[in-house]
Image 1 (cartoon, rainbow, N blue to C red):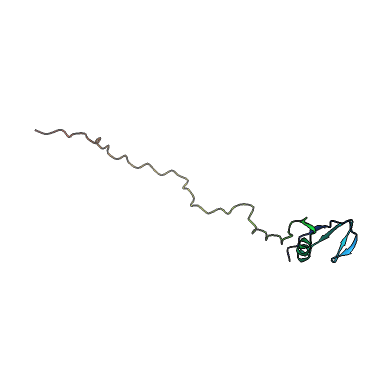
Image 2 (cartoon, one colour):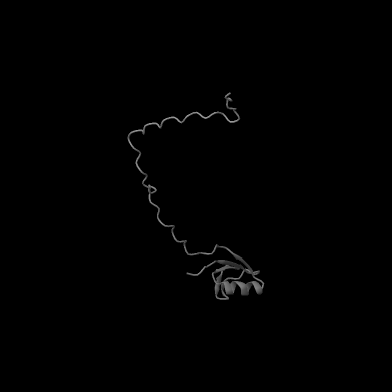
Length: 101
């Protein structure tokens, strides 16, 4: 599919009828022929683009599931594991040991 634009052509005279292969009414015509539009610009006609290019629709993004997939996690045990025995309390750093003697 090609990118078509419409061009509004205005003559400096209020001409009507078929001229340059397009139908003029009161000095105004419309064409989608870019080559003709450029030629008429060189001949002194006022030519303006009146529509955006008609492009092919962008491809649709891939379908996404309604709910994100859940990764299976290992099930938590029903019972809480028994606490480990407390480690012996360590002396604070910088504490000096008592000397024997």
